[in-house]
Image (cartoon, rainbow, N blue to C red; front, side):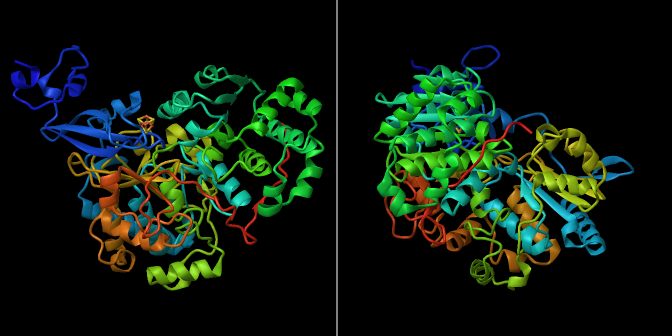
Length: 601
Ligand code: SF4
């Protein structure tokens, strides 16, 4: 008798591993799921396919979705333990309202009525922008899209930002300045196809572990890792550049100097597809190897070696993440990375790309659809044609759309200190753990007239300060889509019900709009995330991040589909932006940008 027969359950042999009781080590029937639900990992931006095991309505195990094109049958330890996030003891279960200093249980109706009344009171006294909203990279794209409309049109404040500003705003700004639009140009597959890979400020072995299998599959590659620390990723490198902290920009400028001085550039590509070459050449004269060696702590010989490797590559890839983005010169460093790719024509081909690796599972979704740093679909707040387009798509008067970006996350916090912000709605983020300046943040939160925290967990350091807590469903309990770092959209599915009275963020936004009296305007005919997704497909049509050809059915079949995916496209394999050398700038040319290194402030 085999184990399946013994337990009376049809179980694949591969499932035994997930059935092991973590405390005793024995295989336990309690952990053998009745069903496995396909979904996408909610931890990091790699976007791995997961199957969540459910038994008696509870999430009991997680395993890789072997058919998913991103992770190819593997998960890292975070993904493998993801079911524990659902069953945690400190899940938020009921709306709680502060009365006489204590958080007391109230019904949803009272909670949302109170929230809308308090926000409206503050706005009528101090102006619409006295309300601030801080969101996250954790919601599904459908929720980001719904929230953007609710905040910008429903509540009429543009002081709306996400914690994503603290992690990848530099990549967004850098791409916009260099290429005219946000959007990572490459694909993970480039890690397999490049012959030279430079990782800078990126410790993927720890933070994006599944990406390492793409490196492992590439037998031809030379891996260069620029990192002041001997990180786990640096230990995998063929060449480790232990540069001084925050000297990455000097290194990149020094490499560009050597490329130009020794004619190692792709003159044809530069002439046809870029602007600003003469200015950049002049500017880079101040980055000779001897100065760069002093700034970086790397020898001149090493600088030449790494530059020659990059210049002679048939396909060269530069990947970066928070080591670059978190710098006070993050945007400039991204521009210097893009310069290297443009000077050598290493962009828009398999293996050739400058490539930002994002942090949170759906930071990309908020960049594309979220309405924080621009209108949905990478449209600009200050472009009259793009504003008119969105107003028409939404059926609202253009005057209801913001004309400019409001305060960024740190400015909203400082705004609360100076009392420009009087009420704040924090959604799916825990700034009292993650915000850099805790003293200022505590001061800010204690200064507010009304603080609403919407979260899947309670108590957390932030929910404990709330005047109103809205309990939210989390990953595994709701439906929608995530977009990963390589622009691949993947389905997120509900496997279990949220605890007690917790509700999906999507439902909370719709119910809030109802209380505001604008549900039909903002969400016409919407009942489920699929309705939001279908509207977002229409809104993104023709944009760089075109989702119009993506459907939930296609995602269910393919596992993951990259944008741009206009209607009519059938090829779901990874894609590259700018393959035709046409960029999203006014003249169609990418900009070579002079980005000066500066010492630590
Ligand atoms: Fe999840 Fe990221 Fe690990 Fe993949 S690499 S399993 S997406 S945490």
